[in-house]
Image (cartoon, rainbow, N blue to C red; front, top):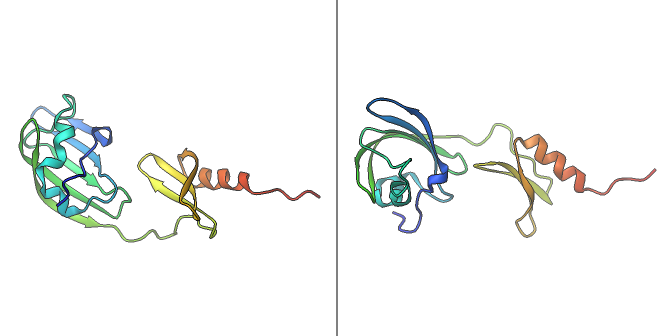
Length: 149
């Protein structure tokens, strides 16, 4: 289990608040595995956030950073520094039906806030995040030299 990776409260989103329990959508940090969800201490930063601290019976839909898997869970115990989960199921996602754009020099990548372009040679991110793959590709194409007739 991971001792260094923690769930960032910025990536915990309220889906609904009921009278007795709440539902949360959680984007997991890069590199976190489904097995890491068994470690109650990964929630320490979330439990320090008054508005997002988990409570017993809360429902969680947890999505891996690159969307390779998702998990459904219930909070079985929660303190001010940790939260234990009962994992209901882990769902593996297959590779994309259509791979993201990659021309050998540049590639489009996904992150929790959208799509971005990297230069493959040094993994440098070019520009900001875009709401769709098409916008990221358009940004990339604007970087190519234009032919002058």
